[in-house]
Image (cartoon, rainbow, N blue to C red; front, side, top):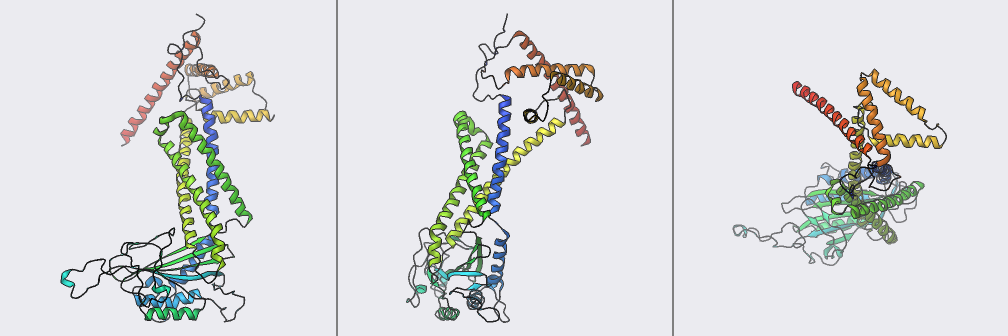
Length: 523
């Protein structure tokens, strides 16, 4: 009979998940290199927009507004505020001194301030600071009947339902009248509550003396009451030397238990993104990131289309989808921040007599930083998984000797591609049949030196010939038909090859059992 029957009567069925070995390994290598470039690009984006000046700017500003104490024996600073009296001492002392730098250390005005304070002589105060208070209504909680004769007022913790919206006190200026919150403004998560925008608001003056008079007037007329639950102090700075904005928020919470809890936020952000050549390099990396995102998305869509429901059974495919979602969210937030900065920055800088709300822009930049940090975390998890696989390949391959050990195609393919490239560049002569025979004899001699007997060497050489002959026909990328006929001789070779593989498997199993017995004996 010229040809034997096909495998499994009628030929091998064409499975959707079938890949030829060489094509699959080449694709794996290409995807690994592509992913490595993507990971490098992502790292540049993540760390490229961060510089040490952000840390030092936050440090000097926190030292000025948090650690500076009131003059005198009490040594009260913002961190140590515990009562309303301490709060007003801070407002009229360290805060006032920290915000208004209207002269040089020798009391001379060495440059034109242009109606703006220069904190530490280098940081421009943008607009004017804003102070905002949120209050709760009376009777938002219930006093027990046994104590109603002693106390008839009860102020619960802050919630949006308990918030007081009515005017109070003198009622003739904004600090005594309630201002409705802005719809899209971010809420603040404090120690004892989540606070929304709006409330009883006033801005400070450009004049230090006028601001001091304002504080004294508010203190004398009891602007802070039992119903006060939080006070925010917001202002923004810009340092042209390092092209950074510093958005500062000092928070004093007045819990229902009494006392004051202080917290703070210092955000140094780069709102003016593209100024230097390095910034434009980062912009090119951002464009590259978007290209990678399109390529990876296309690959995953094609995989889902090909594998359908089987695609979602792999946990690593879910990791791929998670990375894509995080990348899209990062692109959206970055685009949104840039658009909002472009639209709002000019308006915020237009008037120096009003409060410039840069906190909104900083808030979204922080969201973007958090998302990009999560993205790079999962990206490195995937990278470590690929590295572990490659390391495992190397370790297993090193444990096996020549001629009788499994052949891993990745290293073989890389080596083959390298030699082909050298041959095309005429840096290496093509390998002839005589070279192959000489190499085979050298391998046999090396095996004899390592203690292999002639029977094992001949068996290994026969297996290698069978393997090369079968791979040439059934794993060639030039042959596209999956239904290749099998001759009787090839069937016999396949059978003998399978028998030899079974022997090798038995040998490895015995060796593994001996190792396990030795390990057990040591325990």
